[in-house]
Image (cartoon, rainbow, N blue to C red; front, side, top):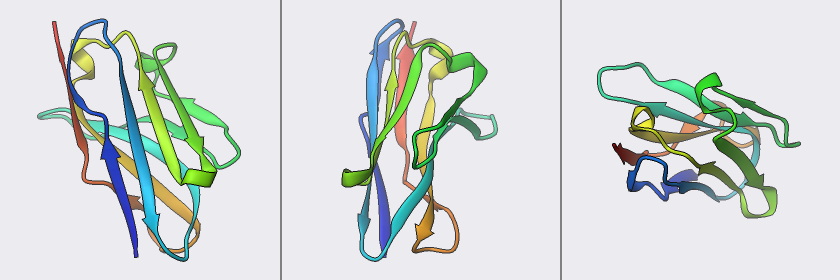
Length: 118
């Protein structure tokens, strides 16, 4: 019924930028809080940034000042602008959403690989 599709990952040099997008599609849903998580090899998944429907945000300390999460409610899309990327940012980035209307549980996207070379 609902699909989350991430895009925008890739290979970038340290200091570069990437913009991730996550688009929710389907029917009979209304997005609530959305977030970006990441998981590096051998490490646990961690919350990178989160944004409420009203625009309140939270960030992982290590990305504050470098990453910006935003959303376009009309497009059912959440973005993660990543600047000043570091090798430590290398991970698979996952989009997560919960819902005011729709699925009872959180939905996850398939993930998009971000690789930062140093």
